[in-house]
Image (cartoon, rainbow, N blue to C red; front, side, top):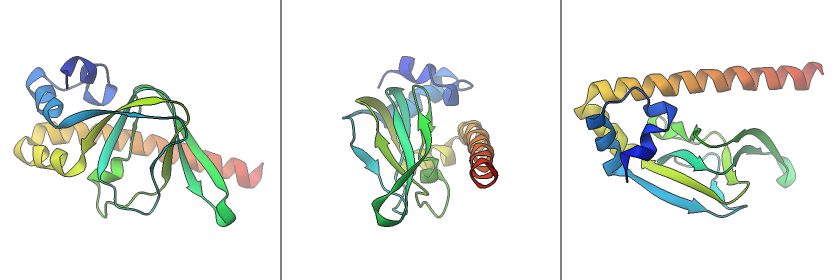
Length: 149
């Protein structure tokens, strides 16, 4: 994979060229068609995903086959960060809302990079912590809105 694509993504914005090259070696592109389920909640999280083009719904499966969309993600956004956080279980499902292009990075491969390059690990995990914090805040607001109208 070319590092020019990685440079465009906010999560990698603080990485230098050498670090971007390390990520490029373990990253791959994947095209998913509209309505394809990328993963299901409560399964093992294996990959980190970044959207380069398209739209992905993060949703929960409710009783009797109903679904509740928690968030819609678009270009440049990351999902499935659970692949880097024990117990490595997905907390929601993901489905392509339109034909989408993703960058896929194996969680185990990325963690191995973090072990050999702690600065790289720190920068990426700091970015992920910011994303997780923001999404938790948004989910709390959604829940409050649902409960209190």
